[in-house]
Length: 172
Image (cartoon, rainbow, N blue to C red; front, side, top):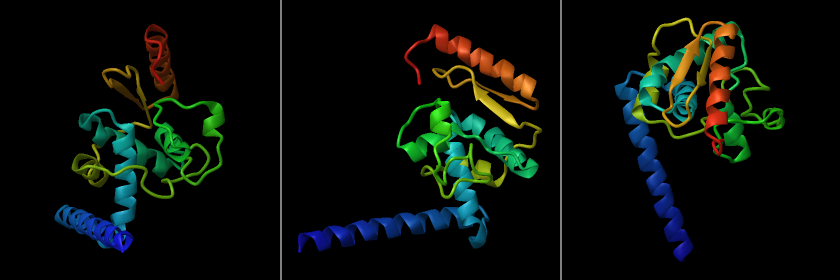
């Protein structure tokens, strides 16, 4: 019936998308056994980043945290699991027990939280060298983001974000 036709069309589209993604990953030199990790990191960067110019530093920040055994603490993973698209999450939301919550569980989330573009995939493959372990968007309208090596620097960035939020009510 008509339902079977739609199922076949949907499967055909998914297969074409998968093949195109494989071509892109192969062209970038990603081995088959790294697809999941690269796409997982790229999806995180895609959803966290406001500008492709930040992607490489974000990827490095997340890799640095992984190497240090730190939680990734990504609001994007919390929002994804809760089905929201907010930039900021509450303590209650961050305490939610789900496999994508990087405030509760070490490592990358269970699976990709978005469909990453080429820039995010490239950033996950070849992140910018740097010592950052924190980043904070300090202006949600422009996407201005600060990267920090220390908790004290990060706390200054968070203060800037809070000041911006007070001056710009209605942003989440």
